[in-house]
Image (tube, rainbow, N blue to C red; front, side, top):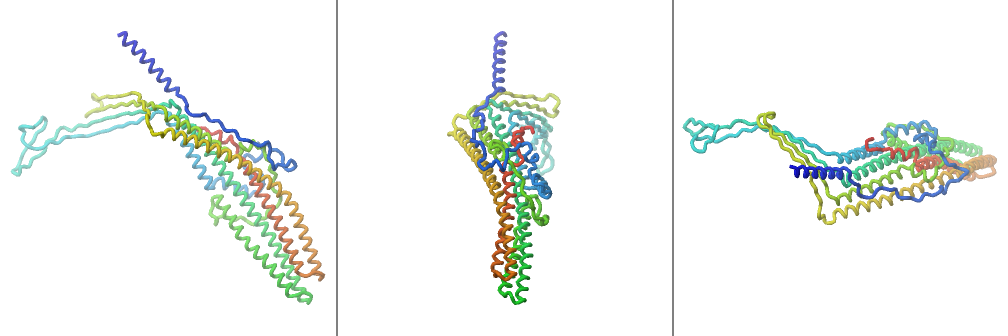
Length: 504
């Protein structure tokens, strides 16, 4: 008796130790550390007299960065885009899917429990014949008629009830589930950043298309004014022709100039319609349902002060997505390594069965015990899986660094464009003013008969081209300002992604 008690004591200790080992577990695979990336001390294209370092908290109106343009119609369109854009809807659905995958991975921490129940009715039928040899109890037979026909014999009917429970639990000893959850969380965070990147891209595309459309409106206004001036010039040549001091050549050339301007004004309808259709699709409407009224824009774009270069790594959602992809790939290495270690599984089962009456003298059975499974030979499968996971991680590191470099290039490109276009606009505006003055002087000379009409034509073309260039530079300044906001990350910040939790 004493020996049995001692053995039971040792068995208890061993079981407790095994349970502690199972519950404590360990995480195999490398822990994640974000790779270092060289960050410049300052932007190359920042000029102190044009920009100053901004305070991130106040830069973009809490995410609604387009409001710094103070354009009411753009604000309305952006609000519609945030609700109805289908590309954003796709990215949001993908994010919701990624969140569900986190819960799916976390479910592996817990045991599974399955129940089964059955209700079976049975009755055995015997063959007809004599009750002599071969007959067994509780069966009887009768015979009637000359045809040898008879009725069958039946045993008493029975009903079998059964109810069973099956459970299974594989403790996460080597951290495979933990790494899988870690990978899923990182994937969900990457998906959330990708959603923000898609939203920023669509918002920026809408703003750029909107100002491109307004640029077309400005071109149309310029052409309308040109047509008006050309009509006056044509009338001047007709008057001079009727007075006998002008030639028919002057009239024909003036008419051709007018018709060319009219054709250019008509042709702008194609470009304007295309931008209007693009805006309609961005805000989730059919092109036939959206009409944007004609309205040339005036004024200058807002000044967008760039932030510290290091802040860019926090503000760009595409950088955040690339960084989270690295974390996901790193965790998947641990999942692959865990396959080298044996799997412990606990599978308790229980069964209750009754015949004819479930509550009278039922039969009970149960079983419980751990199972150990380990792959001895796999032809190098696990080694290849781990190697593939490591290679995938190195690829995500390279993608992350490339994303960062491309982001800095994006900022620098837009900075230099905004800076150069600001200076170019000043010169273009002066050139347009001088060209208009030159045209007026040549017209006066033509009225006085001191110059030929070809000089007027040249001056008209020069004046239009100079004013058109000034309008185009204004449009480019607006679109590149939007591009700079996109390059700096818009109103997004990395805390929005880092705040994600599996139970969110």
